[in-house]
Image (cartoon, one colour):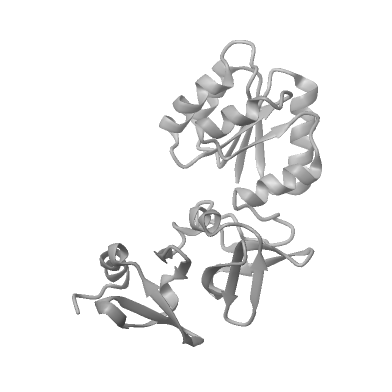
Length: 246
């Protein structure tokens, strides 16, 4: 995994690099001290994470975001700032997250999990030949964090202001909306078949006509659960499953 840290203040840049190295010892971290250098680095290398100070001496970080994304659409950009008022601007620009100076290790860990990155020492191989695609999902439940293989997750459903994650062996509750899981997993073989359900397409066992001429599915290991399929989503699901019309 490759990480860029852009900050015109050397002490702040060094501290962030130090904390990232402690959390992700196998990552390659490169530094830059200006907006011009940020563009130069992005033009030479495809980074997985790009930490960008907002108040650079030459080009404001909020101006750089679009240029960086045009170069590398899949790159995750995280704003670095000493001013909390920039949080709103960060979300308006759609960056993955922002972190405040001085840096807090717990906040940094939370940000990495939000971006779908699992600490290398805990789960070796999470980044590698798959080109930065996650292989495990960090599930925060009951005061602990479970790192579950994506292949073991059957489906996720909304439940009590959060979600139930149904796996091949257990079920976990996490208090975050299903949209957060969809954003993280939609490119990993998961599909939102209905507003309340996110399924692992590879675990679909059966599709059938249901009430009112709608469709529903059953998942491996959960044959007693009937999951409805939204009418506007059935065509996409059929394509994903490689099925024809019923």
